Length: 93
Image (tube, rainbow, N blue to C red):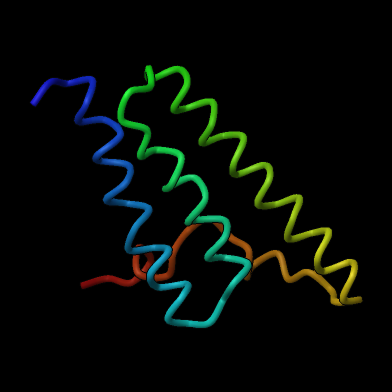
């Protein structure tokens, strides 16, 4: 396995459990923030620049979509809920 292929694979293995945890907690805002960049990292034929640019763009789209949908529903956004750090990373084993 080449080094250029291993980098996105490492990131996908970090994003996947975080998205699964958000789904299990029924946190759809957090799921979107973790799932969209994970999907963009699955580009097989793309160069690393394209893959990383699409991951950053998908994070921006996720935050904007969450903010817009919260505004439509009249909800107050809890900044801690939309945090990028998953709770399983904070727990000490």
